Length: 182
Ligand SMILES: [Cu+2]
Image (cartoon, rainbow, N blue to C red; front, side, top):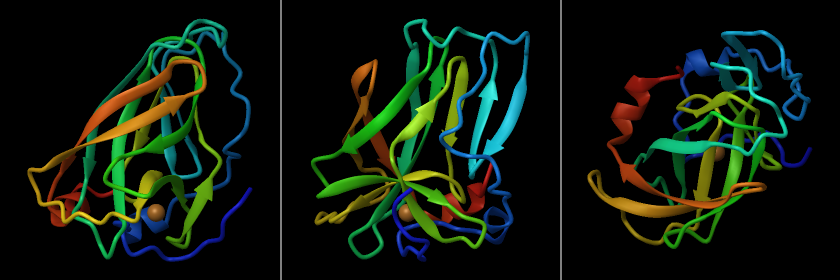
């Protein structure tokens, strides 16, 4: 584990989000092949929904949707998105964007502080939600003023799938606060 828990200007953190349990280990191996139809579990602040039980060794079937961010705060910007996987396990290694110096995977701890994670697990058959009050991608060194309605590209590099480019839609910060933790 790296990083320290520190409040982060660019994040939208609500009281509800701060109340999340953070017990399950983020790097824990997920047993697959169980005859589980729907299992939801909270790992850190990330919600994994298992719609079907795939085999970990199957090719991943990733789709990234709903990529959105608020306006920058200072020079940081939090990005939220959904990763749906109807195949085998994969892992987000890193993210890059031409609008930012760097992008980090951030989790939110029970006190509402941020910590940097080494990548993000995308288990077989799982949907991983990065949403306000929970895990997110933190873009740092954003020099450009981005307004609601703007879009910018974000490259997501996965261990097995390779790089997926998504368009991030900028929305008003207030709408992310209203969205809250899902
Ligand atoms: Cu953050």
